[in-house]
Amino acid sequence: MPQPTTVPDPIAYMDTAARTAAGQDYKQRLTVALDLRPGQTVADVGCGPGTDLARLADAVTVAGSVVGIDREPKMLAEAGRRLADRPNVDLRLGDAHALPLADASVDRAKVDRVLQHVEDPAAAVAEAFRVLRPGGVFGMAEPDWDTLAVADEDVRTSRGFARFVAGTVRNQTIGRQLVRLSTRAGFRVRSVDAVAVVFREFAVADQILGLRRLSARAVEAGDLTAAHVEAWLRRLADETFLAGFTCYIVTAQVPLETPR
Image (cartoon, rainbow, N blue to C red; front, side):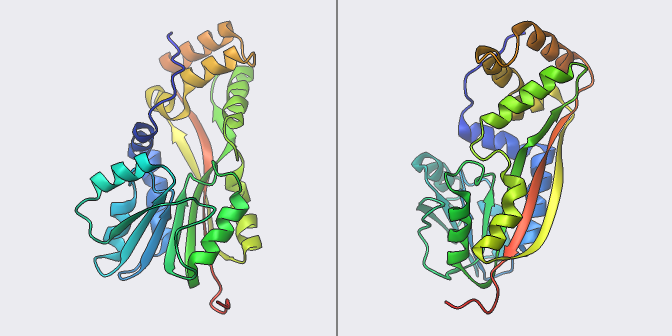
């Protein structure tokens, strides 16, 4: 079985992930947890190609506004193309550690699979606290890659693959850290939801989890053997497939009495 090692285009990858049943489910849960209202101002930190901006804009209506922030000009350019007909969507170049927003200027803020990649998650959470008004809510959806499991009779290869995948992510256990980071930043945690992200189709899991791509890299790194990986992939593709990991959805609120 061929094992491509080329890194997928990030925009295509985000679009694919958002279209999966698991992606649609957790994104809907995050939107509901944010408790969006007409007229609010919402910041989407790490908005990417604008995947969630239309959903947020619909929730706050034309009476509200959505600020999409990303550090990649390519992402913002694509978001601008997709959201060209949304006058209440404002796109800004910026970093999660230094948001281009004034203190206490937004009602809601969200991150979706962003904190797993940032250099300093604690600083990014503290920055969200800074820009939210008293009573404002910060919604976070982050995976815990240390929980990744792929069902197969070769448990050693499945575990080796899972460990390798986790090792490719800067903050691999960020999902389970969200409550602690939020509390330390001054937030009051409102809700915690642990969502099982489950894949039943090999092709979909291969796109999202990089089964062939990352197992090939693991072989190159000496973490797995080519023979075991070849047999492992063949069974995964030909037999009943199951894999999954945990995604944590946490909402945290700025106390109303917070001095500004």
